[in-house]
Amino acid sequence: MTHVDFGGAGPGIVLLHGLMSRATTWWTVAQWLLPHGHVVALDARGHGRDRRRGPWRTEDLVADVAAEVERLDLGPAVVIGHSMGGLHAWGLAATRPDLVRAVVAEDVVPDNRGRSVEDWRWYFDAWPVPFTSLAHVRSFFGTPHVQEFFTEREDGWHLIARLEDLYAIAGEWGERDYWHLVDGVRCPSLLIEAGRGGMRPGQMAEVARRTGGRHVLVEESGHCVHDDAPDVYRGAVEAFLSDVLAR
Image 1 (cartoon, rainbow, N blue to C red):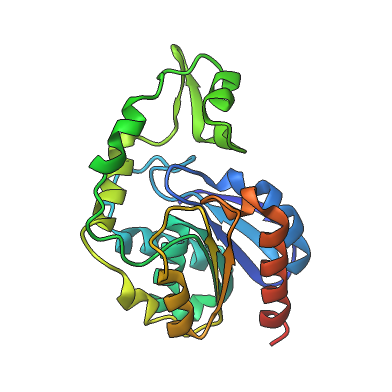
Image 2 (cartoon, helix red, strand yellow):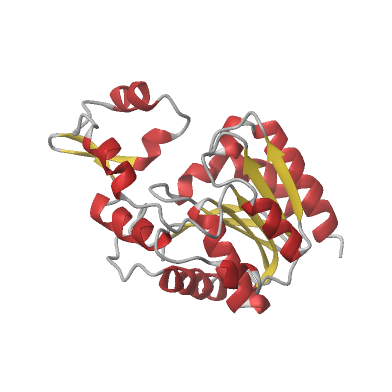
């Protein structure tokens, strides 16, 4: 597993990205996290600089995180995950509680059964791949940091991650639920939900209830709250950290 060490001293703070993303997209968040601890972001397999291919079960990806947190001697860490990364944070807290001090999960739900990758495969098929330039990428998507998902090849710009790998990872989410992981979380938790993120409503509030955690609903935000509503996100996370790290 590859990682980006942003620096800092003190307790480990581990950042886990979402599907299609990569560790480097956490740079802005990492800058204000530095006073709170040693900040490290991880690339999930098949993402960023980690070019391994499968297997893609959630358990395998969680095991990758556990191995890297141990290797880097970051535990017990505050684990902050966006979307897929939030799911992996729950998995780590449930299966390796010795490695996790607290969890922040951003816009992720434990039950997406019935949703298929076929529901959004058309979206990727409609992309004008390859993109001509990074300006073309930014113009097409219009979202912050999206250029970090892409790499240049001889014919233009392509996703770093392989679409077939992304389909394999996300395909599992429509077939099983992860409430058993949520029910295994015993550490402090913060649940940050995007009001316009497209996740099934009510589940993040239920996760907070089951874990005794805090639930923050950011009505105006899309799926990536730390980009869409950065001040709200930062305020919620720093307030949470002030309590967790004082214990």
